[in-house]
Image (cartoon, rainbow, N blue to C red; front, side, top):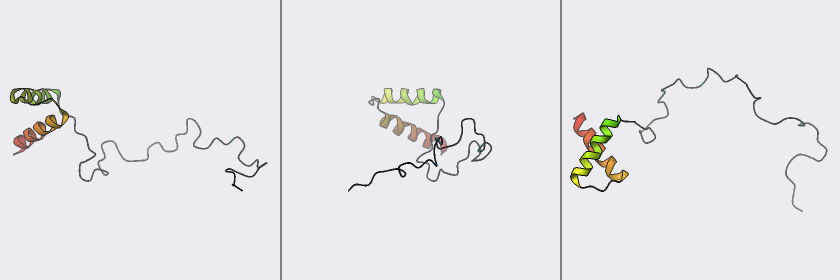
Length: 88
């Protein structure tokens, strides 16, 4: 015989309990990491860096002049090469 999920039939202990915090609960305000915290970034794989749009336009122009297919892979390859050139 397969067991049924949930409490015993007739159990009234959780009537009216929707679970979770009540609407408008502010108990957790002020806790947690401060804005801009990078504790969880270890290798940079999950961190996104948004570059200025003018820089992105330069990368696209370079791709056009080189005759490269406009794919994200090519975009990031040119962008990373340019960033390495700038940082050296």
